[in-house]
Figure 1 (tube, rainbow, N blue to C red):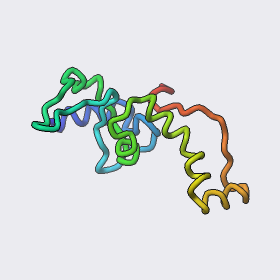
Figure 2: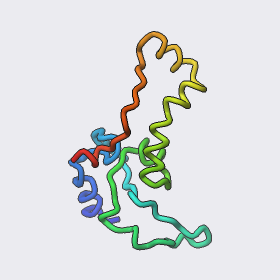
Figure 3: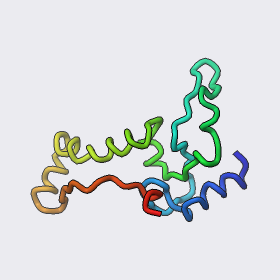
Figure 4: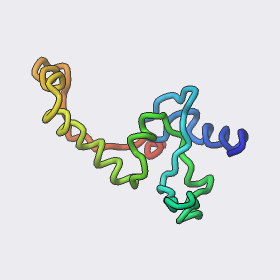
Length: 116
């Protein structure tokens, strides 16, 4: 990707991650909102129409790595279920919750770009 195109993606949401809204730092990623599938043999796109500017999203590394090749709704559901996983597997989380340091809510997961 050309540097000028990368800058356009960065500017798309004012230098913020399209998903969590954090300020992007050096090493930010360009994500595909609709996942781009690749042929495992030669790396060629299976759905090349998805590799376009309108589908590019600026993303912080943690959001992009966690989203991987998920659809937006699958990513949203995964995030919504984080408290369930943390409650089941993280002793530190359970203790923090007991001490009132963590409050779970039924708040829906809304991505930064959806608020603009």
